[in-house]
Amino acid sequence: MTSRARSDRPSPSQHQILETLQARLEYTFQNPALLTQALTHRSFSSDHYERLEFLGDSVLNLAVANLLYKQLGTLPEGDLSRVRANLVKQDTLHHLAVELGLSGILRLGEGEMNSGGQKRPSILADALEAVLGAVYLDAGYQVADALVQRIFSKVEVNPEMQAVGKDAKTELQEWLQARKFKLPIYRVVGTLGAAHKQTFDVECEVPELARCERGIGGSRRAGEQAAAAAMLQVIKDNGLK
Image 1 (cartoon, helix red, strand yellow):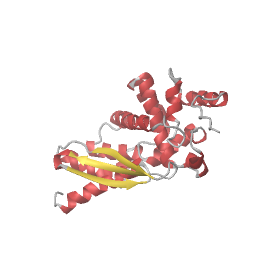
Image 2 (cartoon, rainbow, N blue to C red):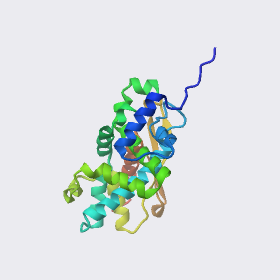
Image 3 (tube, rainbow, N blue to C red):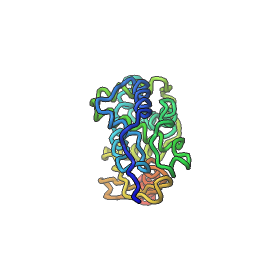
Image 4 (tube, rainbow, N blue to C red):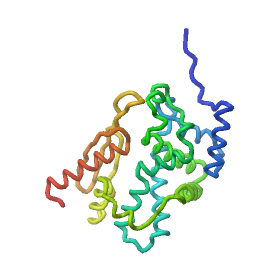
């Protein structure tokens, strides 16, 4: 007896859920399949959100930079970078994703669902970025930027946020920018474990140093932070600071 493949087409109830989310986003998709994909974890389907998340991460960073440039225009570049890092970190994105109700509509595999994946901060933050990537593909940057402005309208933005302790990625970025080097390149080079309990092997490359360092974490962000920390350690060990 063969098992029937799971359909990726939204059921009537799922369609209503997607309509509700679009109302919260104040945006209606021309291609609803993009939104469905943005809400689909790899444990549910091979047509999952990770490529959209990659795209949404870049859209988010540019849109938040635009927001800060307008609101905190007198702040120096380094301080602006630190404020942005605090705005796009996992904790903030997780909170915003919960406010939008993403935790109740993510499409997760049974193992991920049973392990509490619908409440996991890393998954919710990734899904929010994927939604932004989906909007970008559906309607372009201007619409995606406007959505970011709306989503972040209730988030307090002030210069004091730059004083919060730096994470490894921010510290590495500032070190590179101070020397007019290109920004680091992060790549996921592998994943380990079951879909509901994965670890991410991430590579950090700094072309001007001709170095690649790797780090492992329970999410893509955590892996990037670990890789950045490894690169900072190399810089320190070689007396480059």
